Picture (spheres, rainbow, N blue to C red):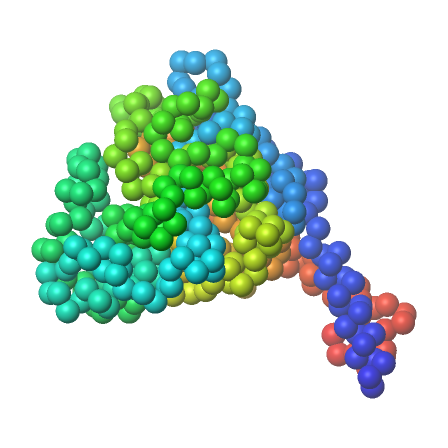
Length: 396
């Protein structure tokens, strides 16, 4: 019996490994689909990267950096990644917490004593963890309108004295940019370094991300950069990049190319333990609060049956598969980043246009790849059961 069990495990292991290969045909199909959809929707430009295990197996650009220009988008073209920046804040916070700079369960007011809600009894209930878990309890997108009105952070934060959380912090979901970014002054106080330097030192440099940066200056200093576009009267028009959301760097301040984000996904898959180890990866992707609203997202709702926020990442149940995901949207740009730890597969999509085509591309990729891999799993299992050496009484 023991021999049969060992043999069975060996057969299943052998074929499960074979079933996880990403084929050239699958890559070619997505590349063709990506280019066709962007062309049909007249998107100015975009890029993608596919990661499998520890390699970027495909990366490409499409279109132009700016309407009316001949400069092409390639895999190294830098985009604003908007709220995908939150994944970097989660990773960096996990690194700094593991180094002992702060604890997740410390009150935010320990570092920001002037911060207050309308009812002061809530103040000490707001922990550092709640900022990055989007579980502060505050109504969603509180005072984002003031960010867009180009107000400085020191003029926005006092406004929270007019609000109370809808629930005790940690108990309900409310997506934030202003409160999420309070992790920045906490990091600065506990390390005596600015946020951009911390990202460069702890993530960008060790992961060899060639063109990643933080802030408006970093974006403008990059020659190969995409220009934002918005649609008016059926045509795409370029826009000047605004500084407003850059002032909230943890929430929306990172600039990156598809290649940069490909290396970031390789780290998420566990292939750079000297930067992010398994304990830290588990910490930032552990489900913190359920996000029911995500179940109603157009195109995604056809596939996801459960959704949570972790620490700077969303965690979706995509059919039978778990998908770790985040999207970003800021004037003139869309970005999506996702990976499956089980399948060791990741996808980056960047657009220099405000178009929901990004969701169509992402859901197409993941539904196609998961279906193919599940079929491969079944075929491998059947093939394993039919091996002459397999015990006759295995119930397949």
